[in-house]
Image (cartoon, rainbow, N blue to C red; front, side, top):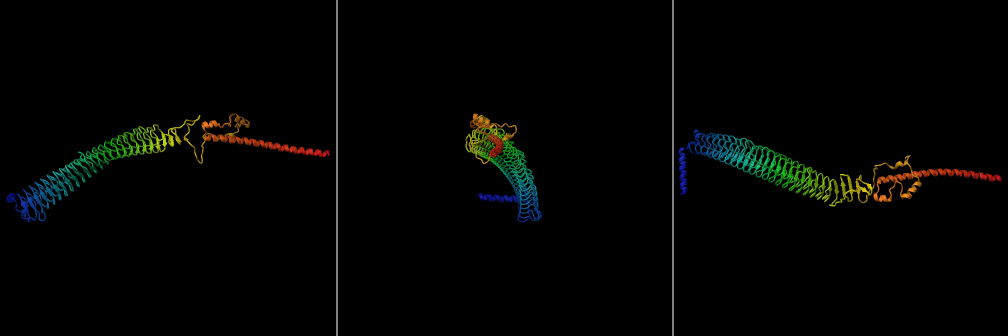
Length: 566
C-alpha cells in the first residue's frame, strides 16, 4: 500500500512539475521545474543535463559545451552558460556559475557566486559562497571557505577557512579551523579552532585551538597538541609539540618545545625545551636548551642555560650560563650562574650568586652551599663541601670540607689526601697532609712551597740558591781561622764553625742549598789550609836544601882540614 502511494505521489509530482517545465530541444535532457534550462530552446546541442527546480540552469547553452550538468534546487546553476560537467544541489547553489566546469556544490547557496572557478567541491550551507574564480578547492562544512577567491584549498569543518580570500594551498580541518585566514598560504590547520585567527603562511597547527591567537600573523610555525602555541601572535619558525606547549608565546621565534606544558609561559626566542614541563615557567630567558622531564621547569629569565636530564636545573629561575647534565643535576639551583654539573645529583643545592663551579661525577658538588669557583672531578667529590676555589680530583675527595682554596688528589674521602694543596699560600704537600707547618723546629718554613712525607728518589736535583755561593772564602779580606782556633772550637762545640750541630739538624732539619754552600765553604777553607801548608812545606824544603848545602860544605871543609893535618 505504501509503495503504491509513493509511486502515485511521484507520478503526480512529475506530472505537476512537467506542466510548467520549459520545453528543451537537446538530447538526453531532463528538466523538472518552472523555466529550468529555458535558454536551451535556441537549439543548442547541450547534452546529458538534468535540471530540477525553479530556473535551475536557466541560461545554460552552448553548441559544444554546457553539457553533462546536473542542477537541483531553486535557481541552482541559474547563470550557467558554458560550464559543463557541474553538479549543483541546493537553493541557489552555483547560482552565478558561467564558465566554471567540473564543480560539485552541495548545499543552499553553496558556490553561489562562482563564475569561472572549476574543479571545486563545496559541501555545506554557503560553503564557498563567494568563490568567483578559485579552482581546485574542496570545502566541506557550514560556511566553509565562505569568502574564498583563490585556488588549491581544502577546508573541512564548520566555518573552516571562512575568511580566506587569496590564500592558496591551505588545508583546514575542524570547527572554525583557519577561520580568519585571508591571504595565508600553504597552511595546515587540523583541530577544533586550530589557527582560528591565524593569517600567516606555511604553518602546521594540529590540535584543539592550536595557534588560535586573535592576532596570529606568524609564519613557518609547527604546533601540535592541545592548545599548543595558543597565543602566538608574531612568532615565526617555532615548533611546539604537546598539550599547552608554547601556550603563552606571542612574539618569540626560532623556538622548539616538545612535551606537555613545555615552554608554556615562554615569550622570547631561541629556546629549545624537550620534555614534560620543561621550561614551563620560562618567560624572557633566551637561548636555553632544556631536555628532560621538568628540566629547567622554574626558569623565568635565566638565559644561555643547557639542562639535560630528569629534573635537571628544575629550580633555576634567573641564573644564566649553566650546563647541567644528568638526573637532578643542578636541581635546587636558583640564581647561581656559570656552573657546569655533569652526573646524577651533581651540583644540586648550590646557592652561590656567581657559581662558576665545575662538578663532574655522581653527586659531585652536591650541597655545596654558597661555594663558588670550585672544580670537583670524581664520584661524590666535594659532596657537602661548602668552601670556594677548591680543586678536588678523585672519587670521594674533599667530602665535607669547609675550607677554601684547597687541592685534593686521592681516591677516597680521607682528610689527608695523597696530594694536598693550598692555593692561597701556594703550597703543595705529598704523602698525606691536611695542613702545612709554619716551622721546622725553630726554623720558619713559611716561604716553603713543597712538602713531602717519606723519601724522595730522583736522579738529579738542581738547587737555585737565593743567597751567594761560598767563593767569599777566597776574598782577600776573608778571615780564615787558624787550625789551632778550629781545633779549639771543635773541642768546645763538637762541630766545625758555621756548621749546624747534630742536635740542631735533628730538631730543625737542614736546608739543602744552604748546607751545600756551608760544605763548599769548608772545602774552600780546607783548600786554603792546604795551600798554606804547601807553601810552608816548600819553604821548609828550601830551608832543608840550604841547610843540606851548608852541611855538605862543612863536611868538605872538615875533610880538607883533616887531610892537611896528615
